[in-house]
Image 1: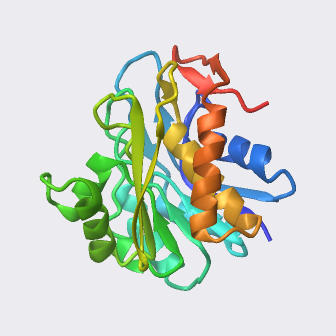
Image 2: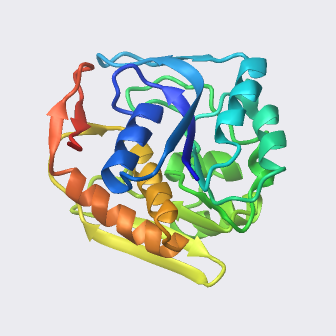
Length: 249
């Protein structure tokens, strides 16, 4: 069974389904990969991104490519495709990693919204928002830390939440917060010095999905993916967009 990815097409290759696929090849090279593009994006050069959703009918037809996936990772889903995805997810029970992308790292909304399909979250769903995405989901800009992670779980019904702390105020450490029904844990480690890298959120979600495909539990997959990404951040290359990209070869 394959490892599936839904998300945007970033022409720079630094993020979106291209980054997902390259991450999967690095971590689970034996996994057959199935990708479905949700939107075409214009990014790079330090300018605000633009997103162009694919046609809803075409998207529904292409979902047949991921009908038999073992694990699915979902990136940006334009609002116009949310109902189609909700209907498709409601008929399947597989581990799903949702990275609720709203904006590009250079700025510019990507048209993403979890509102129309978030109700399909269940025990096998892991949400991986950053702080701003989490606040958008719960509708409360004042929440922080463990309270924010718990609120995301309560609002969405997700089986687990990984609140990413990398975008928080720059300090010498990064603290991610992991919630599941057993409680809340802080995943703290030193911040890796280096350039601002495009697509690390996509890579983390894809790494977790890859580890799940290999047989890890969600908690094991999160730990392994965090360690993998911290190591991968030490090897970068200049991308065609003027940003640094992960170098996975």
